[in-house]
Length: 91
Image (cartoon, rainbow, N blue to C red; front, top):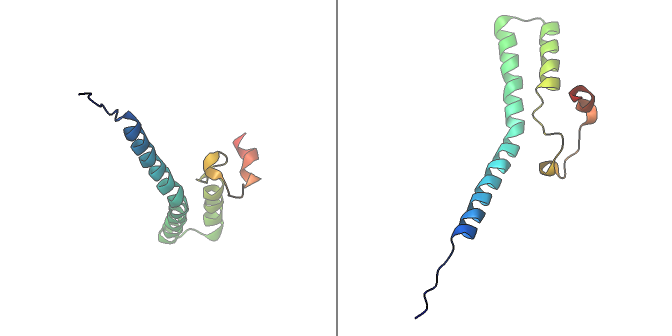
């Protein structure tokens, strides 16, 4: 009688790839929420410490420019509009 052996490597590999894809999708979908929380935290800090509008505006601009969590290029950005305003700052 012939014994059949199954190699579990392909199945395990596809399961791991599915898990990694799910993690990347989750992280990609949560970028907007993280940016919104950062903006809300900055606003709350400014209100608590009594910042004037100029200080708040400068910090908000810095957070918008340097704290952008949006990826600039790659296969995960397919279908998104690319914001080229950050390209000069990153070079």
